[in-house]
Image 1 (cartoon, rainbow, N blue to C red):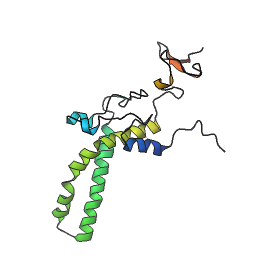
Image 2: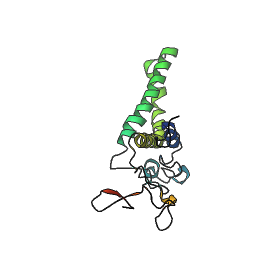
Image 3: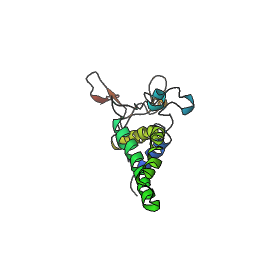
Image 4: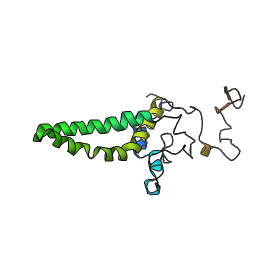
Length: 170
């Protein structure tokens, strides 16, 4: 039986966390302001800075979520409604513009509602394929108030001023 202790988590775990709008790393903290507390469009579309539990940064750089909006949100919503429009055109054979109006009217609404999930799915896919956390790093909750863990920091890496990693015990 293969040793699964060193394998990365399954992609479905990240997808479930993304659909629940939760942190891809720990799955506990929300990525966005809860919808009941949204006061503006900025609150609706902008993710929080990072996870308060595990410290995972949601946005790596400026423009990080552009691909999620153009690729996932517009592509998925446009593709779904194109299939629906072609199916309506084939099945019921209405006038050309009748099928398109049935499709074009709900597209902006669905795109608005799906924007958070598109960003969350993009974040989960990016974290699955290119995680940017240290493999031996423990969450801050795993350490006591002095910053030490239960196992005397075995395998914990720190960075010095030059950005080089080294074991804290050496």
